[in-house]
Image (cartoon, rainbow, N blue to C red; front, side):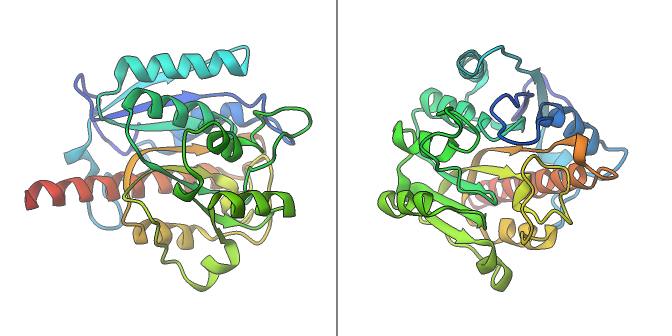
Amino acid sequence: MLFGIPPSEKPNLYILGIPWDNSSSYRRGCARGPRAIREATSEKLYNGFNESLVNLTEYWGYKDLGDVKAESFGELVEKVYELIKSHYTGELFIFLGGDHSITYATFRALKKVSQEEFGLIYFDAHPDLYPEYEGDRYSHACTGRRLVEEGFVKGRNVVQIGIRAPTKEQIEFAEEHGIKIILASEIYHCQKVDVPFERAYFSFDMDVLDPAFAPGVGNPEPGGLTTRELVEVIKSLKTEVVAFDVVELNPSYDYKGITAFAAAKIIREILGKTAKNELTLHVGG
């Protein structure tokens, strides 16, 4: 798996699947996302180089921690925290969802374990800033709001990219708390994005892409980014990646693996970007 990157007993990269979709509000099935992403990142499909010709196999060694399973969201949050606590000493984590509520569990855990400051870059068609959704305060439609309201990230350290299905209530919350929203229409005109912080957790909801490029999602929203536009945004960001997730991939609606392969592309470019930054810092030092 993973572009030919070798498994390692002393990894600098951890992979954790979180097959949870009980917080989904529309089409269930994202629980099978981790398996689909693992299959799509196989070295049988891709070589180990990203677009910038960074050889991922020379920098990364990984350990797959398997999947976290839970009967309730509270149990999921605690299991994710304990797992990260038992492994994290500064390595990069990739989290494979699952619906977008898993970002609450992973971001919260990393903040509590690392005790470090970092922002949140949130790629999504939806702001996920509802106070509650259908009676669920931890619905995938509430993830951004819960993280801000519970103090795990300051609003001014949140940037949302690709938004095109907001509500007035959610925009007002974003404005009140200093959350920066970059609409999909803005990305259409310019793929260069600047953020006001140096380190961030990156969260990729696959519905940030237009359904033509990612049909296999729980809540498809036309008018989104192309895969090319998303890659260019990733390249433009100067922010250090402390961890990232890929969520909302629903294999039940994925045609010929289009969405899974787009997820693999995102992962490969993020790994190359992170390795390149680390190698540059090492050489420069």
